[in-house]
Image 1 (cartoon, helix red, strand yellow):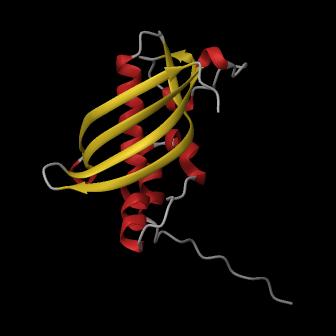
Image 2 (image 1 turned 90 degrees about the horizontal axis):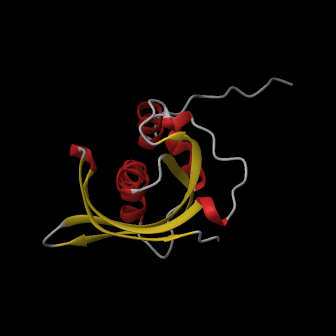
Length: 151
């Protein structure tokens, strides 16, 4: 019996994005578009969503009063809309967890989460982001967070 040959598939554009942006986005690896979306919406989300999540995470850490960095623990839900005045707008609910690194440390992407993921070091946030990810242009339209929220 001959073994199957495995082919490396680089057909997924998000695979290259993961390689370029680093392991921070691996947390969203299991993410799938939700709802009754057409294939164009699903393809847009798959292609650009990781970069939008990275931007939202960066903005959360900049605004946070905590000295430690937070990373995305889980994508709870997400969708995208087309708004005539804004263009492509992503909305998402993300759960963050506190890491052991400072938020201005050099390698936050590889920083481990704190050992005890309890209610005091998790945050759930809702973000709305106007995005042109193909130009790496983002604008935070809304961010609402609940500290200590557990899912």
